[in-house]
Image 1 (tube, rainbow over the protein chains, first blue to last red):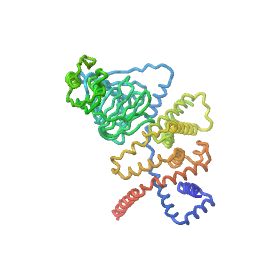
Image 2: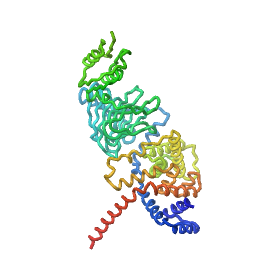
Image 3: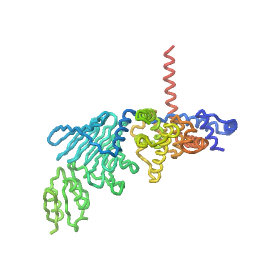
Image 4: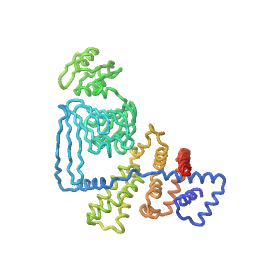
Length: 318
Length: 186
């Protein structure tokens, strides 16, 4: 009986016709104790549910253009896409390329920012700040900041995102890993050819993962998405991951092989530690470290020799 | 179907179909992609396809099927699509605007309904579709549609209760504003 009342009320509230017997059942129900209060609440519920809004109406011209592109892409016929490339050299280290993809509808330009051998700081059109590590690129459309805030990252970068609730800031990387934020700062690493995308959050909230496997991470949290296994792994935050930007390395009773990993990532070289001392603990902090200084200190601490070359630091036990 | 007819249908029905897909998947991007895909299928098959009845109802059916498949896929993986409700979860500006709070609360309450109840309720309440049409597309009876709407009402009463108060406040504020306007006329 009870559930039938809800069904009848649904019809009444939406202005549909109810039969005589239904009307009767409803009136009978209303006379029962407390049901008048319940009725008022349900009426209010129905009214409140009217506050639901569909997302903003799609722009049909944009959607039609998207469709034209989709349609042409799905054609099995080979198509030569002509690309006009303008290159603007802003400094020796900065190359800003403006690509204009030529479609027969409304050509939208894509902007490519590439850091070559230097760390590059760049302000995006929405005033968000991005710091690109060496050999990193970001690519975004001309419409970035007006109708969307989406960009594509290859490499490693630190983002300080301006808050804008209407336009979520979305970073796409290879293998469909998406990072979505409203306004926060974080470090993201998605190097081509590597099997993982790494996130470290400095402030705010970040949604990270692929379409159906994602999680929200907050301040001082860190996560890795393993592309091969399609797995999202939460891990301990580690400030050394941002050393490329802060130039600070800090170790606090860390295993020597973890120290080796941090050095390898910071200096971009291979670090070899003899297996017998891999689990030894090391503490110490470095400001603007150089390969030689760090190697010497570690070698002295553990009483071993070391050899530095362009590609590696090799420690050896005598 | 000529290219011109196709474009007319696209422009005419896109928003309606997006709303339908959104009613089920509750994510704007997913909904739009889905509708694009449905149109692409229609385009690729436009020569051999014989549509019984109207193009509109063919498209509606295709969108509903695509949405249901999407939901099934998510369910199979036993994962909820967190990209959906993320905007609502953001609590930093929760008190910024009462109306926003209510809209977000209603959105969230609807998302919490079970997929079937949610789909039927959203389609019926917000998408200008008759219960009879919904029943036909879903292959169920009109009675089953009405039952699901009743279920939604029952569940929403509980989840929306915390919002009664704040909406009352807005009502009072609106009335005060209204009275002031009326008074200023005299």
